Amino acid sequence: MRKPFVAGNWKMNTDSQGSVELAKAVADGSLGAAGQSVDVAVCPPFVYLKSVAGAVSSSNIAVGAQDMYYEAKGAFTGEISASMLKDIGCTYVLCGHSERRHVIGETDELINKKVAAAIGGGLLPILCVGELQSEREASQTQDVVTRHVKEGLAGLSAEKASAVTIAYEPVWAIGTGLTATPQQAQEVHSFIRELLGRIYDSELAEEIRIQYGGSVKPASAAELMGQTDIDGLLVGGASLKSDDFLAIIQAAL
Ligand code: PGA
Image (cartoon, rainbow, N blue to C red; front, side, top):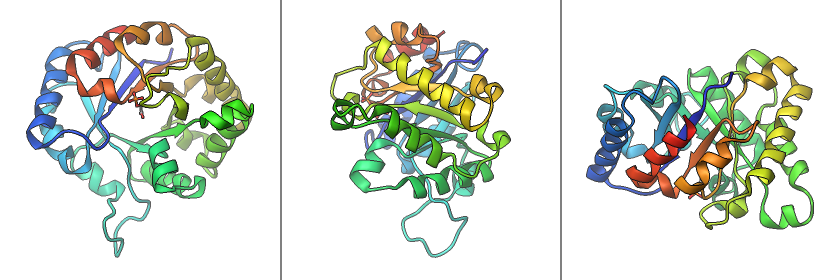
């Protein structure tokens, strides 16, 4: 049985006070539920990671970073390593979020190095995959997702890959208010699970959690979570409002 996993991606939002308040509200509101029947993580901007980790330290809420660099240390101005994230209390790290792929220009090769370095550094990567609207319209969804998954996990043994969560986030559904229908999402999730079975084996495919992301709201969370291959949710906008995020956690229980 895969344990549900809900993560909030705060993106480039909040400030020092607001991030701690939001983290505390999530920790207080999910008392008991988080960690037992559902894994919950919040992913604030880098500069607020440490204070957010402090704010949730007596709860079961985990903290994740939104990105990292693959080198361990050295002359990489502006970058942050896995060991730095681990040092300040991070458990998870997003790798290859679509905004990093399409706004910043990250490649599958770079994302693969980040995933491998995250695992090597003791973090649990959330590998984000998903097609653009134009790719869906051109019936390329499966090709794009195959490339993102295969290249994102390239060179990883089954044991290492078991540390990964995949987040399927159709780019056309991110921040647009357009959620994939539960059936559309399920179709791609089951395709990803089959693909994992082909790359590795059915045991690993059954074990890996696949989150859905893209305009998830309290009203859509339960039906999405009701799908066989949807094991969790990666939530952007709605994770910035504690009431909405708590309702989404509740729906995942
Ligand atoms: P959204 O973002 O929920 O605001 O669409 C999801 C994400 O980008 O992870």
